[in-house]
Image 1 (cartoon, rainbow, N blue to C red):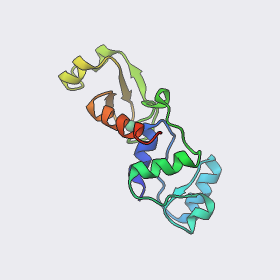
Image 2: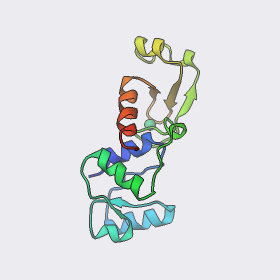
Image 3: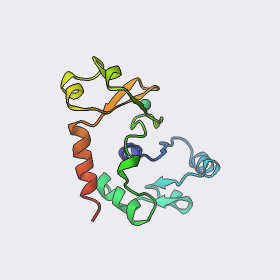
Length: 138
Ligand SMILES: [Zn+2]
């Protein structure tokens, strides 16, 4: 239910697991790994944090207001938004031919996820995300 929020938390640099399975297993895993359990389920929320809103912007705002997250530029682009692995900064030359030509020309910094074999760079999509996040912080 909170898959989109999970991706955004990774974009913000947070180690985020999207849990599936039985409630008690999810609670046990969160406790074992020292994670904050985010949920929409009121029952489960007694063991974690209840997300009340629906849009991802509002959800991030809830977490910001609760002091659970911070939005810091230097933490962004550290995790793969798909799989949560740490991204590896790579030389611009290594991205040549692997990313769209325009993106290659317009960016100087590139990252790579070894798990997903996916390249990241600060493109238009990223700038839009950044604007939306900036819109959240007063
Ligand atoms: Zn990945």
